[in-house]
Length: 493
Image (cartoon, rainbow, N blue to C red; front, top):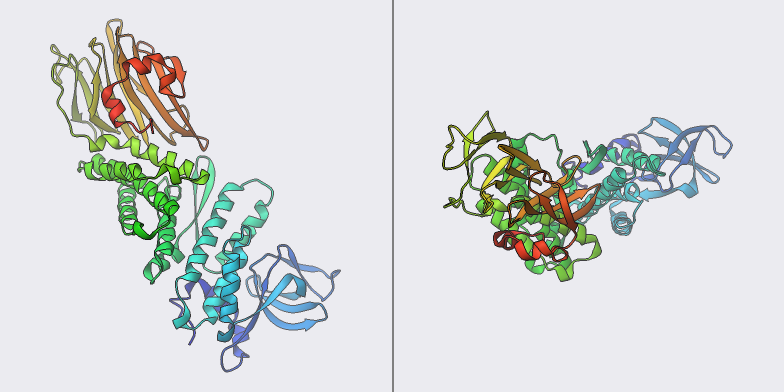
């Protein structure tokens, strides 16, 4: 019995391509097809190398076998609707008989981890799903399809405009013919390609091993495969679903490296959930604490070079929303305070008040569509400045500083870095006695690289006076850092 269409959905193009061949197939349904194994193989009008080229074939292309001429095979390409001849050394004959399914699976397992052979591997996966009996099909082929499709999507995203880009584009066309869907969207001026994850969802629906499930969950919860244009309500639903998926993974039996990856992904996802809940007026404290706990559980001694970037990413995302885990504490005895009120739909307005000026007639009023973390308010001992954390995006947090310049009050928003918001946090780290300087810590991902700095700023202009990549390199940080900042920050990890 063959795999039903529901199970072998990824092989639907293969089945369609074999429609004419099946009519002449033996009673048991066994069929031999041809899979192209080399890129830029020529489909020619006659069985000689000097004959006119009909089409250019790529690894993974499926051809119907119609005959043989010396060192060429006569074939028909259903995808391009072209007939012709191809050199026998550039293709591989594949039997779709049930007895040959184990051989197809063995080749698939070999190709699974071969960079550059994704299209060929997916072609073998489709052939195996077509040949194997239903009872023999487990999560293995779908795990392999997911791994190869995801790797091909990463190659396509990374190699835009580079040598080999033509081959990658051709491989994407080939796998699309096997039902492998890639989602495309623009991110940071580049086209991001992401596998839609159908094979991985099939893995989770089957009796897969814990290792296979963990790999599937990691692939289905990637941060960089979320369309940045997704509306906020849909983004929150997606984040909640990602968090639920990650919590299903049993960490006890996983290797240490995979445990760390799950924990780091949990930290980033739960942080996004905390931000979304708080932004919609819900309690985000539980989600924020889960993010903090997941990051704290990462065993840094078991982090490889490839995971160092993922750890920095998880730490930044956790840092962005960590104020959600802190209870609101009313300020007592402070010369300045902030009164929050609703502005336009989705907007929060901040009114700076003191003993002589209430919220009705504040010293200064500013509004933001970001999440204002009122529990982060820090007032300078001199009473001439107030700092508060404002988070406009799940992975981006700014520092708003209300300060007096001459006789006027002004409010400045300090970003985590210059340029387009990508991923970053800036934290208030302390007031320097004298009322003229303050300490901040910044960390951001810029052009794919993580940058961290500890800075001493002038309070009047907010210009940087001194900067270091370690807090101990600045004497001001050693002497005047805020105890609450030191307790909460993850920049000292």
